[in-house]
Each structure stands twice: as C-alpha cells, then as structure tokens.
Amino acid sequence: MAEGDAPSGARPGVGPLAGVRVVELAGIGPGPFAAMMLADLGADVVRVDRAADVRPEAFGAPHPDLLNRGRRSIAVDLKSADGRDVARTLVGSADVLVEGFRPGVTERLGVGPAECLAANPRLVYGRMTGWGQDGPNAPYAGHDIDYLALTGALHGIGRAGAGPVPPLNLLGDFGGGGMLLALGIVSALYAVRGGARGQVVDAAVVDGVAVLSTQIHALRRMGMWQDPRGVNLLDGGAPFYDTYACADGRYVAVGALEERFYAELVRRTGFPLPPDEALDRDDPANWPALRRAWARLFRTRTRDEWTALVGDSDACLAPVLDWAEAPTHPHLAAREVFVSHAGATQPAPAPRFSGTPTALRRPPPHPGEHTDEVLAELGYPPERIRALRASAATA
Image (cartoon, rainbow, N blue to C red; front, side, top):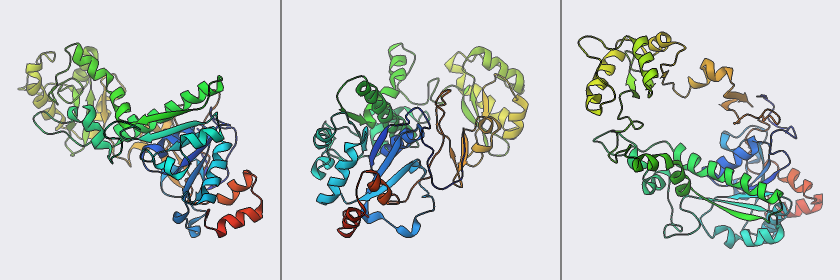
C-alpha cells in the first residue's frame, strides 16, 4: 500500500476504478463513506459542496474529516439556476452521481434522476437514505439507532436481562448503508458497461442492515438462536465468546467457538483455577458458572500478560485495543492496515488488488478548494468562471 504526505496532487490510474468519474452531492455519514470507498478504489470523485461553506483561508491544509479523502471539491449554489447548470454539466461527463438527501430534495433542486439521466443516459444515480425512497417512513428523519431498531438488529445487541445497547454506527450507516450503496453503484456500473442503460440505485440503511442479519434469521429457523438477547453463541451469551476484564482493568476478547480452539485456550491459560471445575461447555446450563470461572482466571494477569502467554496460537484470544493502540499492533502494522497520509494516521483503502493496487491519492479537501480547476476541466473559459463567482453560483 503506497503512502504519501503531499497535501495535493493525484496519481492517475490507481486502483480498479481508475477512469470512473463520480459526482458527489455533499452530505453526511453513509453517502460520503460510499464516495470515499469509490475514491479509495481509484475513481475520480468531485464533491459538490455548498457555496456558503467555503473558507478560502483554509485551502492548502487537509480538512480533518477523513471520510472526504480522495476527492476534489467544487462549491456550487444548487438553488441558483447557474449553479444547477454547473451541476448538470458535471453530471453530463460523469459515470456516477451520489446523493444522500431526503426523498424529493434533489428533484426540487432540479438535479433529480429524471433531469440527470436525461442529460446522461448512461449515468448511475446512487441514492442513500435511512428509510429508502418509498414507504411510510421515507419522508421522515432518522439515525442509525432508529434503523437498527426497526430491523430487529438493535434488539439482539446487549446483555441478558438488560436493555438493547446503542452500538457504534458502523453497523447501520456504514455497513448496511454506505457499503451497500458502493456495492450497488459498482454493480450498476458493470451493467452499464455491459450495454444496459443508466439507472437509479436506491440504497437504504434498513435494507442493508436486514441483509446483514440474514444469518441470524437462518439460525432462528434452524432452532439455533433464541430471541432473548445475551443468551446465544454470538451475542455474549456463551462464555467462550465474550470479553473479560484483566488485572489492569483492560480487556481480552475470547472467540473460541470450536471445540479444538477452546481446548487450545484451556491448555494455554491453565483453566480452570481451583476450586472451579472444567464443566461441559456445550450445556448452556453451565454457561453462568463457566463465565464466573473464566472471569476469575483473567483477573489474575494483565491484558498484555495474557496476550503474551497465549502467543501465536489458535486459542482465539486477542487484546481489546483502543483507537490509539490499534494502528501499532504488529499484525496491523505488517499489513499496513493503517497508513499515514498528509499528516494523518487513518485506515488504508481496502480490499487489496494484485493487478490494480490502490493508494491514498488526496487528503480531504476544504469546500470549494478545486472549483476553478474542475470548471476549467469542464471547458468553462476564465471569463465564465469569474462570472459564476460574481453571481455567487459558485465559490
């Protein structure tokens, strides 16, 4: 994975999506994440920011929002006729548009699917919402936790006898939302490259989270999953798939689901301590006593002592690292899972490709940092660019 510290200057032709042109209407959360994924994979992404957000004094230094990495920014007032014309000109030369507004907003702005596909019949128009483009909840606001609640996923996250735990928004916004949109866009691009017409991709967080939960629904059908939370193999119910506090207050994660891995964990750790007994782990009736026994054992050493003791093995024990520790872990460092680019340590593009390797090419831009550059590429003469600025259609 190539690194770089230069704050500007893209390397063309990097990644499997090199040559794909994307227009992103600035938003928050899953939409920008999808655009980041496309940029990480080599697409040329131009972000359309609000003209009111431009702060020229910040140009030249990376914006701190890493979700916006890999693209250029043009500032446009989409409420003005000239601004909408600029947006449609951008779309006319693009392969993809990404937007994350509530249903109907881009239509009212004059840059909805009908207008954009009329200007560019081969366009993939990617839409990102929480509830989707239709359905009773479509017009209303929501956040990650709300979408998880309706899909059943939130019900399954938490300890036995306690309420659901609000998780990080990795599951909804990014896993079920942005990643679903990125996959949908790439799939639609494949169809277009095969001769299909352009189309709209309706990606909704509720749809994506429901798809992510397919295995749980399958386990329920097979009688291998109970509806109460915190009593199953993968939700903290099993003592061999849980986290434990160590002597220093830090934690280890145990994921020894299979018998042979559990046997290795037992052998490496010396479990159990007297007077605890090595109870049959396959009987859920023994799980509470086994959990107490494991908890007592893990409190006898620090997190790093347990990590060193278990060592390189199939015991399926890992230290629970914090955000600052994670980039320095030997395995993650060896794979360059985190890289330094433009002065910021951040997750590297993923996945990896043998023939079309990816790289971070640009740091996050400030709104409007590349307006003149992008307009010139679109064929706007200098006097027209000045006129657009004077009218506040761009900034």
